Image (cartoon, rainbow, N blue to C red; front, side, top):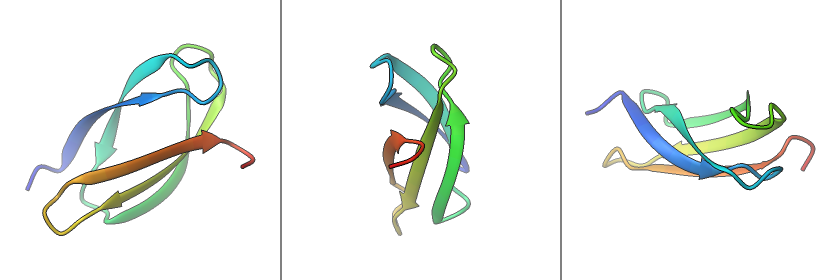
Length: 63
């Protein structure tokens, strides 16, 4: 199984599409990462299924 996955997400603040690196070795994750464009904090909720596919949901930090 691939441990790191490049994923494109859309910043909930500025709307820019950015590329992020997802760690697939942890099946459920919640963390904050700053947008590479506007530097505002994006809340990530990541779930990895049994086949190694990532589901990534991004929201404003306080949602």
